[in-house]
Amino acid sequence: MRLSPSGKPYFIINLILAGVIMIIMGYSFFFSPDENRYPVPCIHEKITGEPCPSCGLSHAFSLIVRGRIDEALEWNSQALRVFLFFALQLVMRIGLGMVAMSGYEKLRKIAIADAVVSSVMALATFYPFLWSSWLILF
Image 1 (cartoon, rainbow, N blue to C red):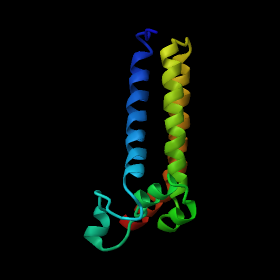
Image 2: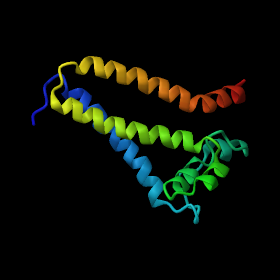
Image 3: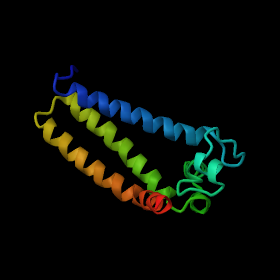
Image 4: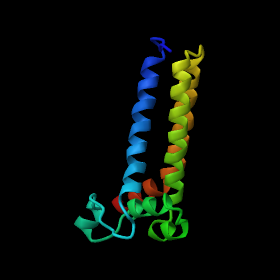
């Protein structure tokens, strides 16, 4: 199937975003939560000695993909919310990428709705982190 010229950029954006989310999920599968050898340290904690609102997310994601939800929430109480955001976004990116490939006539309206829905989801998901960061700064 050949992409229409108007659907190609939207398809590419969805493909890139799905790839990034799959890398995040792969990172979670690859690193064992039992060994605690994550290669990306928390810079905030290194500098200040205090944990930041997102501390423990990598560990929690590794536990979630293994079905250990209760343990994940001990590492970061917002972990399930963030994980579900990424999981839903992955499903949306794959589905909307397929819509873009199909040459659907109303792709522009779908892309606008996608941007609005994804923005609302992101704000709802990351609000606790944004609020905590705001309180830390001021």
